[in-house]
Length: 145
Image 1: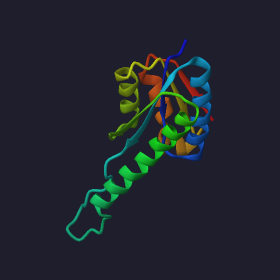
Image 2: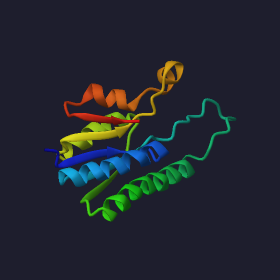
Image 3: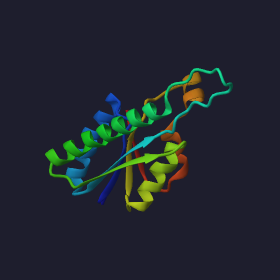
Image 4: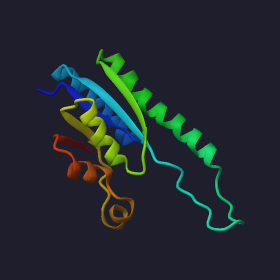
């Protein structure tokens, strides 16, 4: 039924648990996994000449290295189970848009993703990429906690 699974990851422990579930799901369905990590661009803009801000180049480099490690962890889990895998590292201010676009581009028929289950003010201020994906895709989304 499901032949291509999109698995977004943010490198968290919860995402690692979702990876284990996705690998088993893919094994049962004879599916491939497309893993994606989305890097958000450098968030700081100096408002004055005297502002002290982190180095944007260092931020970008560290973000890219961390993103590649996130995708590589999924690749290793998939390889260990003999599951075909493709990894993507994308850049966007809106990760949910990259997730939805990747699912379409790679002909995925389901999205498996972890949700941190934030509530109250944390949900309001931090947002929920999972909620945004649910609102912007026509694909089934399996939300893991």
